[in-house]
Image (cartoon, rainbow, N blue to C red; front, side):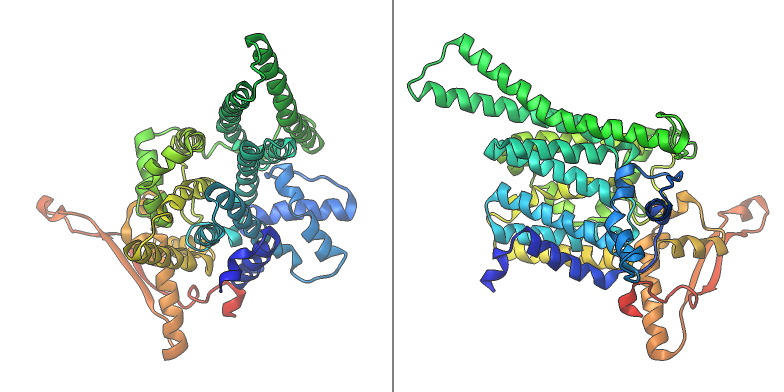
Length: 464
């Protein structure tokens, strides 16, 4: 049993990938289908077609499109989503192993990340997985650079940061805290190097110290920003190839860029019963209480997480369309691995009570995201349309209409049909309130009774 924790990056990737295959759907959701189609058409005819995703998201499908088209491996294209999710878990394993110096702890944290948070359903739905993978990898390489001062770690950090920018339209927001983090690292490294030089008998003058620091900083900026500039140019060229203009895109933001109260958005995207970040990632609640200990040991990393959250959450929460019908708060998926990092401090002085608490919350998180993984997120919205419940307000704030509750009802109905031969029914009514005081009838405003026979069959191929 002990040897299981001696695994490396590749072994961890394979292990997570095989486990995630149990949940594969063999169908694309959201705009993932058109993203794959873009690379498939390019391989077949060389034509670049218009679509919404960034060039890195399109290119991420390249090896799997090749397997499907040229190697004739059926459904190979659907391997992309679990593959990159598995890589995300493995990168997180590398990060936490180097951060906390414990392979066992890193192993546990990686499994918690993949199987007890929103990363599990998004291994099926896609859309945010490439941004999450590339951003986390960029941060990981910069963290490794802070430890080994290896220029290749710095260069790879810049490469993946450039890829993150071209994975999502708002990927540029990630660059702000990442650059701040890089300067914090350089400040710490320069202080450490100069300290070692002064205590090695060299005693450099202030002029030598300033020249040394300036030279190292220049090398750092060139190594980090050169690949970022390359990917920016690549993205602009891709826009020109699609639309004839480097500033044109195919992404219509008119439905999303409608500002509302920032307070409503922030409280909703973090705490609402329908789309709250902490509802769909309950293990992050434990992690939240560990940030004080995390600050003491990893000040630079703490500053990065806080700045990223302060930029990214209000940016998404400030618009009326701060979420959609997809599972949980989709656009906050990128924050999940960073929010989990302080959990490593929780595992340092572990005892029986801590184990029981963490195991309980892990199982709750696994169940919540399990029922979100085995069903298409579109089934909830289709059901609600039948009974006029398909409003964002109801989906966000009414507990009975919460995605976790609805998908649990689907699973319960499926098991009931399997063992008793018939499906359950969805029942909900929203009545007017106190109209009788105005001599009017208390009518039913929305809702109804619907058989779940057309909804309760799981979409994951494991259940078929």
